[in-house]
Length: 297
Image (cartoon, rainbow, N blue to C red):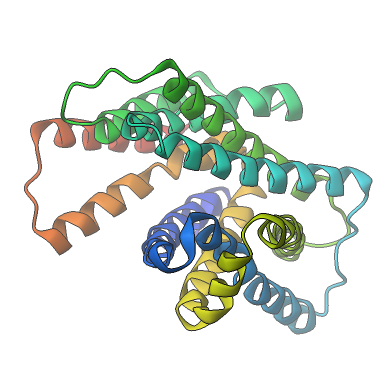
């Protein structure tokens, strides 16, 4: 039996695996429905599955739904909107010629979420955890940085760091929403907050697509079969993320979640049979050391 103190580790690992699969499924939709449309798929087709998880949990356990008060709702809104904004900034960064560097800078999220957690949720971290965050983040940046020497524009650097900040703020918002809810166990509470967040995101992006990109909105429904897999896996991955947020600080979760890079790299190597460079080995070693440190902390 897994000790309760280590449940967040299990939840985060499964969430990371699910995210790798979801990203692969979502990426295949970009050519047919566009980047914003593919982003909406994550929310729109994930919502029914999240709602189904919530219904099954509610009736199977007989537990009352949690009370989502003003504070919990405000935190959840912050998380949902910050995630949308972070995604928009990330997409803007990808239009820059230095998008690879910018993507690497987005991975500073783990460092920034630790700062946000301390400021907004008053969550302090042990020195070992702080060191683990920097070590794992350095490893991911080594893995993400382009092979060729590249001088990113100041705009690219700013977009990458700011996008990482909003992704971090999103994680803190979701944890705040879960902690502020009351009246139910952590599983039902996490699932309720997830369902609320996805509903908010569907509404916001739905309004945007109806206003600015009606063709993408129509293409989403035309590609509903391919979108179902992305929606299901996305909802399942998010369920594990939210469960992890209910158990420990967002900084711990987002640091351990950097193993997603290792999963994605492993799948890429196995699928494309690419060789591994010394730099990639060094980066993977740093990520592994950081992961071990954050679990020990």
